[in-house]
Length: 375
Image (cartoon, rainbow, N blue to C red):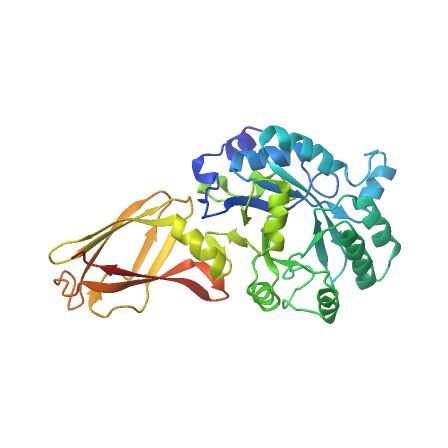
């Protein structure tokens, strides 16, 4: 017991913080969590407490929509329907100012695998159809159609899950059918147990699907993440017009999401660029007689990894730099002849790759800004 308590002693380094961008609140959301009401080991209120301690704004309760709950009711463990975990979490979420989304995970074999249905109103109606079908594809199709009647937002979960994709991450014909029927809105490109999937990321880009990330946590989160090493929970960044369930839903449909996991951020350039510019802020530019001084400040709690990109050949600056959370650092720019050579131009481009802001598989964000000596 003492060991568990020590492991759950969170500090500021374990709390998410990303700055807002112009016009939007930057919300952090775990879009995939389980509770004791399916196959998790945690009560719904504890999921909210964990999120509160970690600075997570949004929690999606996505207990499995399959016959596990039915078996537990039959065994006398519960006397409630499949919506109870959400009701418990939502009530506690109001006390902790955590936004709680009503969801569920339709769990079938591959193909088509598992799908989260977010913003639903009744998991029982979905479960009845899912339970009645033996065929995996038919069960998923009827379940997602019922969920859509409830105005759901449907996410294909962990396509790279090793239990269902042991050798390769594959898009099956069944997924094409679901996509062409408008029953797939997003893909989970980062899963807490499987990490990042470049294949899923590319599929999302090709088909204009929202990027989603979540822990898929079943245990107490402190047993799954090494908080003592400063690990941050994987999450979805949601750029919402308002801090409400409706604001989250609108942002997901508008594809204003990015994904954080293992120090990396994944998203479209349209989403990541304003986030980066709000995160790594240029607070000072001063031209001296023989050099230029640029001061940056990292206003998030995630390191920013920079490497030199092709730009102006007349200048010299360091090729690699990690800007740590809340750190200020000064970049000195000199002439290109050698380190410390006089700067001979009054205007140049500072060009950097942001190596942990990924706009497509293998493609880091390019940051390029023109600096001009005042006249």
